[in-house]
Amino acid sequence: MILLIIFLLSSYGVTNIITSGKIFEPLRKYLREAPILGYWIKCPMCMGVPVGIGICALGFWPDPVIDWWKNWIAAGAASSGWCWMVRVRLHSMGEDTL
Image (cartoon, rainbow, N blue to C red; front, side, top):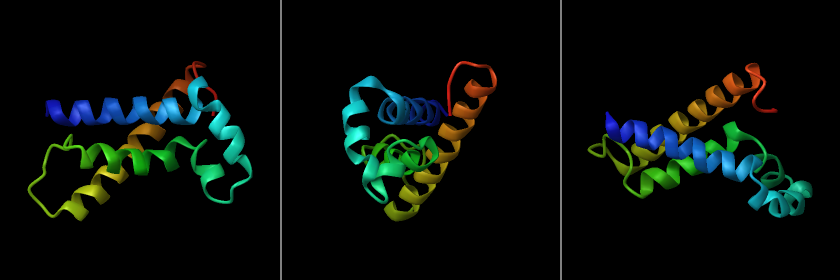
């Protein structure tokens, strides 16, 4: 259970840094015109997928017993959904912009 909490918190943290952090702002401006990456780098739900897969590949996934590719799919989906739910909740409280 603690590994799932670590996974969810770290996936939101990394996704938030990439999609809205100042450190990645030059990269977001540079990729703005790119067809796919330009949209992914500013969308928390989209960017949550590769971030979740990356964190899973690092070993922070609670159930590494099944096949690696099934873990990666589950981690990408969980990270994407979690990042979007947190972002929407923060937006409804007036703390974040979408």
